[in-house]
Length: 252
Image (cartoon, rainbow, N blue to C red; front, top):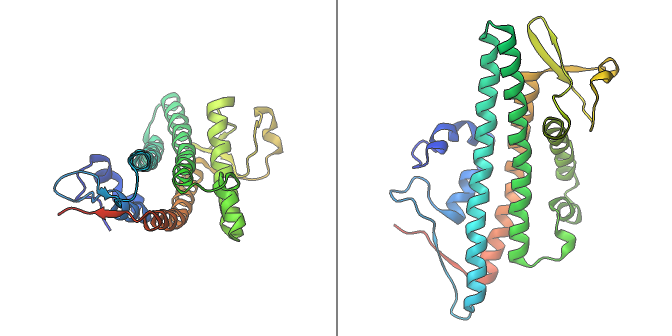
């Protein structure tokens, strides 16, 4: 797959690298939103059954537009994380130590702000679909739904990946510059993290990982997880379209 033919500049720039581990991004768009490679950039037209009242049609169209906005924003946050990973790697070529230090951590922490936002976007997508399908409140959280459906392994993956990403993100946003140490011109962060880590606790850390390797691994694992979770979103949204008797006009 490729988004190089997309009319959107960000999709052109980062489509290939993101689709490597997140091919369901394009599949979701092609199924429900619009063809990014079409001559004219426009969303698909939803054709409602004559029995559906105008108020319900309006609610569905509002939800449909929100899905477009949130789903594309999720992609942009992944693109932002990839951009910051490149910037992080480039800091190794900076000779000025003060400049290298500043730009290194600026890129690292900004990348985790993007990755943390990806999980918030995912939950927003789920809640929009939840509202459209009128599921009970026990399904409000995606993990609750997966647990009740017997998808415990997927729940564990969410806990493993989302937890470390959000802790690194929260450290940067809420607590201050994260715990790290330099060694032979490179920077390292704790392999295992927990909330509200203090600088004074550095001597308690048993395992460290290079900051670039840390970000690269978390970015890849996030994209793999988001891709697998999209199988659930695609299935649920397909079920909603079928249940409501909606026809999608894909245009020319």
